[in-house]
Image (cartoon, rainbow, N blue to C red; front, side, top):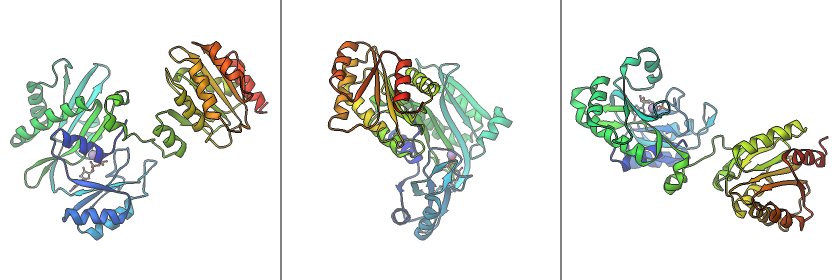
Length: 379
Ligand code: GDP
Ligand code: MN
């Protein structure tokens, strides 16, 4: 899960990493007010889930609150690599003398966290990595013991940091590693790690990705999850905790398990339908999850039918059936809803659905796809 720079800085602050202070605004007037409160030169920075904002014009320095207003006006609504800027961070600008780089990420090959440092930070770090990889010092951390002091020294001297900053850099590395582990991040990066004109070390940017599978133990971070492209139904689905992707076709698809849902998309496609969406209710879904799922799919425009494909393992078919009944209570469904229930408690599930004329049962995925496509009049 990607989070914004301002959120990354809040996290870093929690781990005693010095960062620039500021607040977010979604309109120029608020940006001006924040700049007034800061009372000196500010940086106005686009908050989007993508790097390279500086090069794209998404970062401006403003000397006065009026300039901050104008900067925010120019940046808000800007399109950066396909993402619309909805928020800007207004923070005290730092007078940067030197830009270093610190980065940590989970390295899948070695199954360890790799920690990197370079004295050549800044917006060209990708080029440094490509053209002169020797300028990036790297160590791999044994998860049983964590980042060791000798590794920190290897990083700092290997990267060629100015010796005057060994103490600060050591503290940054220790705290950033603690932050990475504590927040269950799979990536934590400070670029630039700025050395200011007056000799302080400060995180001028903060990029952190959180492992989504850990969100159950970080309720405070879970609220930071956003859908990527700003699609309204996707955003609502995210709020309801569903894995949902809008596809734009005519047959709504609900299933449990990503593999089963993807197969459902293929089968419906082969039968002549066009999947409207991908929706995975996951394993062990209770009735209220199913109800949410149906409500979300019904928001899709141009829907001509719905196929519900459940393979009951830890998911109980009777729970799913109850959810379907709940979701559609008092609702006039003017499109066919074909339900295939198979596995745990399938008999009980079918009996629950038999009581309602709104649903068409199917014995297999194949049959469900054929039925929904033909009932929808698509062939
Ligand atoms: P990114 O381009 O998305 O990685 O955004 P960054 O936050 O890293 O900003 C890009 C560049 O803008 C940095 O490398 C700095 O050179 C510059 N920059 C960002 N914030 C400040 C600031 O407060 N003061 C100054 N002087 N430059 C800044
Ligand atoms: Mn950066």
